[in-house]
Image (cartoon, rainbow, N blue to C red; front, side):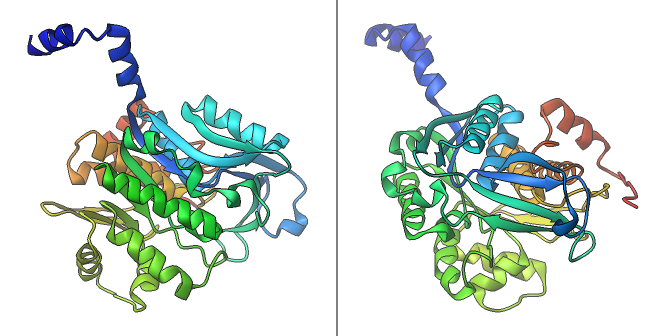
Length: 346
């Protein structure tokens, strides 16, 4: 009743209210969309002849995962005007990820990477990048849309983007500053890539982003980069990570150990789900999407972590990073069978 009177007194047309509601974004992000070329067979790429193409990129995977679960998402990024960039843009649009802040640059291409499965280490996927002159490396603070971030509930960042170039690093910290100024929650996945930068260069950047985030996603190897030491006990490690500043820490312990999470009031553990692993790339992004979906839905920490575990398991069951990520009904079905769920991958 009060709302109706207030709206009438302000004489705001209903269409304007609907536009305001429509403009609200659950999760925005900035990063590098990539083209993934994934061979139909396994082993060394020199013996591969047939490849599938997929849209990919850490932030892209997270946003698509959230979009499928019913959340409104938006990406800030640079692409080229080449055919593969057009393919990626069409994939984002088909998955209902907002692309109003995606800029296409004449004369530049998107980054490309090849997946090499079960080689050189069995059960693992390796990646070979061709991204040194991609449009994404030109992302700058001027490409960061303050309005997009300000209308978001969460800004999601990863440690990949600041590793791409100096201007990408500046854009990342510009986005972070805007989010903190406007009271927008910040989600940060460390995603350290040793192929992009040295640990001594990454350490201060990842540490600052982790300290200024609200939700931190990290694994023990990335923790070693930040602290310059190895902490064996997950409980001790997660406490040290929370001491940096984030309200909630999700510690990804790997395919055999699962995940643990801790906030100021709750702690949760999720054991890994045994599924047939086709391609391990994308599991971490699936976990982030599942957890943030639970966070946005005001689920308990335990349910959010279980959602993360299910999404990670589904992601590795087929080629491509996000193709097997679930919609809401599919996720709930997996959650209902999670306890005791086992599947022999071999």
